Amino acid sequence: MKFHFHVLINQASGSGQGKKVGDKISTLLLEKNFLHTLYYSEYAGHEREIARNLAETTLLPWNEETKESEEPFPLLMVIGGDGTLHQVINEFYRLNYDLPVSYIPGGSGNDFARGIGLSLKPEQAFWQIVKAPAPQTINTIVYDEKVQQETGVALNNVGIGLDAAIVATTNESTAKKQLNKYNLGSLSYISSILKLLFTQKGFPILVELNGNEHFFKKAFLCTTTNHPYFGGGVAIAPMAQADKRSLDLVVVERIPMYKLFWLIIKLARKTHTTSKHFHHFTSSRLRIVSTIPQYGQADGEVLQPQSFDITFTTRNQLVWYQK
Ligand SMILES: Nc1ncnc2c1ncn2[C@@H]1O[C@H](COP(=O)(O)OP(=O)(O)OP(=O)(O)O)[C@@H](O)[C@H]1O
Image (cartoon, rainbow, N blue to C red; front, side, top):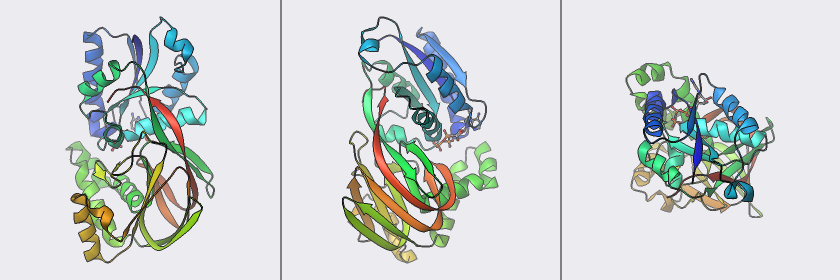
């Protein structure tokens, strides 16, 4: 397959990891004589503008015509964290573009790459892309939130409660910026986790799926996920699969601290799914209503505290790589 790679790099992602990966891949593209053009995202939101411009002028859908064409296929290659890819995919979704993308992880969490079996090593991920003769169909989560009227797509997960509060607190923490300078950003993440394990209160939610209603008086973590991982490699839903057109919802109830720590130990041992405080549902469509304002997160991008009446469905996205 002949490509023209349009490489969109977020150098700020992963506390500078995006820059390192971007440099490595651009050197590789030059050395191996691949046709390519580089684009650097210079501020938050710029990645969306670049993606939109490319979609309007350069990128092509993958269809019978482009399959047969002798011309190099113009393929977008995103280098950054989960948040960068999230923004690009959302721009395409907003403008109704159905375009294949490729991705090389350069963030700190890189859950999407983990979830679809794309190497976390940039060079290996690069060859997984270059050697693939065609894109793979990957499931994504479409969310439609009625209270604030927000819609979008997530590649990894959408959470209400604990996970979202952790992301928000870590992002707000001034310590993070300091620690990131020394590549210790994960310390600020761990300190947010510890703080919120103690302070996050249980909140009522109603879940509707497969024609049934489930009510939780004190939900603590409520995450709809497309693949097993969240929070940088924690396999919260080991049964989830990104190549299946279904979503997995995980609800953990607020339980006393000693039980919670036991559940965390079980999580580390991957035996948490047997706990009676861990609830799991699978469906291709589900609705969650949460009336007490909570933080939300979609692929690690924060939704400010709000009530939620959110419906999740699925959508296909073509991702260029081979396992
Ligand atoms: N040049 C830039 N400077 C600062 N922020 C940027 C820049 N370009 C894009 N962004 C913003 O960075 C965010 C995405 O960051 P991303 O999630 O990729 O990195 P990360 O948070 O370090 O990685 P991870 O999600 O794996 O922890 C998006 O909200 C995007 O708008």
